[in-house]
Image 1 (tube, rainbow, N blue to C red):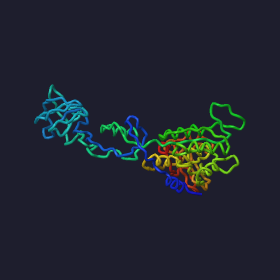
Image 2: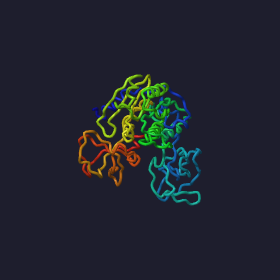
Image 3: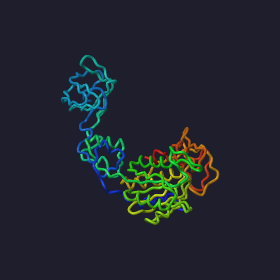
Image 4: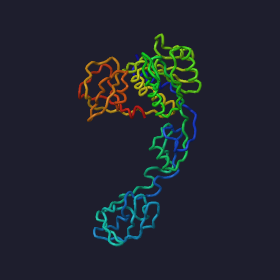
Length: 395
């Protein structure tokens, strides 16, 4: 069996980033991947400005008992006059610092008498002043190709006046589900059937990444029906994804259908849950076959499908952040596969969901991360374990 890292490297080596681009209004670009660097044509802030409400003054004019004449009032959005020697200016947060001033005293440190102010605390040069270009320099690349446009990055784009952004086109993902034993929610269950939880979960995961999703629904356990669904899916999609039906059972037809229309690589990955993983191609589309067990499908998406799709979307690769924390559990029977246990952080320790079966989807809904336990490793309570937050694995 392949290790998790080997399988991930093989899969990512097959990912071909999209090349098509489009220009969008910045307000419509959340979650999209930037196709070219965004260079600022302005400095941010454009002028030295006050970080506080207070009084602008020259440090050289200050003395412990000296009263300075307040000769002007400078609100945000207005430029004041050069500061006359021995005077101060009433100034508000964000307002440009007048020429000649080299400090801003907080109003809490000042005493006001009529139109004169006494600064009670000795100011220092540059105090409470935000310098021009402190955030962004004129000509600086503030965002780079391959960055996904988060709310903060869209705020950066707005801060330099950008209204349109060049982004890669959406990745087109087609998905369908196999198994006569599963039924769509809203329909009565026949004897031996269960509701299809993978469809709702996977569609939401794809949409959360910003993919354009074509849902082909449920396909009967029949070879010709599966071939027809694959042909339809591969006609317009960049990536075709299925859940279940990629093994060698008599009712598992996805493997044969993919082999008829393209090629298929079956990988056994030394991990639990989620050992089976399939990659192939149907026409120009990539094919990914996920396990049918819902927790297996969820974990395989987090560890393999998400980074694969992000690379296909043109996003720059970035490893999710993990951290260590003490285990609030015992794992005395070391497995032969690397385990990803559904867990939650409580009082600074990793607590496991009581039932770690790959069919118990409530464990994934309850968890806020995965505890990563290497193959053959015993965990005692209090041992440090690696914890992968789901916020990192799903963003």
